[in-house]
Image (spheres, rainbow, N blue to C red):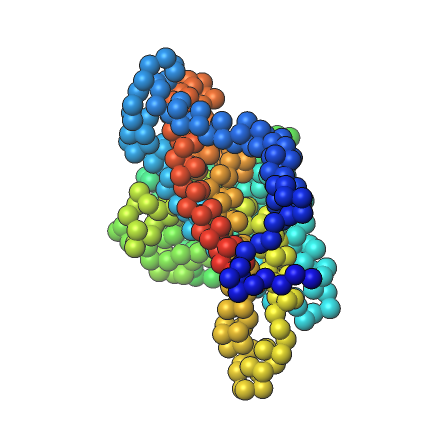
Length: 465
């Protein structure tokens, strides 16, 4: 075995036979290039060329025949639709990766010590097996406005009605033969003041019997009760015909929950609500007053939240143009439902590699579980959390499917994002490939810094090993 001399320290001895020295892997450069060539060709054809052509096309006009300079890029900051897309993308980047990562961290930590943790993780991760198209269709149904069709509004309506049940008799009104007349602002009032001992009849029509409350009972005939004012409010309609106006017929139902006000000189002196059989009672001070059925009786029943509407939230610390729309937050929630499981799985894998002796040492030193989580677990999981955040950030910058499918046509402009604007501009009714290419380049420029951060982080982690 030959030992290098002091003068030749660091020199590599020549190969036997005096030929060219091979690389460390034992292969020549031309052979390595031959193996890399197919991958380089595909990379150039599928990545480099499209990027280069998009940059070139972004400087041409709508038709692609004339040079437009930076007009397309100027339009990025003047077109209202593009500005809306940029603001919405900002909310996507702020909310979706952060909330999904936090939920993934909570799920991973809390399910680590329970016997059914694996089953729970499986359920949370299952949405990842669903395509964006299928998830969009699911949440389009979840956010349906009608409570009988949309799960979200069914829950919201049930909770609301449990605390604030409304009568809700839209389109209900009296007939000319009834003792009621229009009172202004959608209300109705009695034609004559009420008197003690004289039962009051408040008949209405215009309510479809199947839309009456389930708990409504057959109406009772008006009768005097005590020294106050009493009467009955009912639906003066007999299914199949044969009923008599202003008379309570056997099959006619009471208008349960109908609000009745006694008004004297423009002031409300007493209030009552009709029972299940339509009966009501007012104190003696209501004598001589007109009875008013306020307009709130005839509002449509509470239908929940318009999840896919264009309404913007009112945030005092932000200007209104920067506030998110309800439809954007609804779609972000659908994305979080899908990707929280992805974050949970990655964080759980990182959590499994955390040295348990460090956690136990912190507990022995008197740290509470919250202190162990905040000062030991989270810092040790920082590299994993960074991977999840960066991956989700890149993903949400190019989100398209969910926005296109969930948002209805009337709200699509308000839920617009850059990827959707790219599609609509390039392939819509009036395509503008110049502006579409500029949006694509702008979107690439937004993604590149995040990619560079990720590459730098990977190199830093690799240098520690």
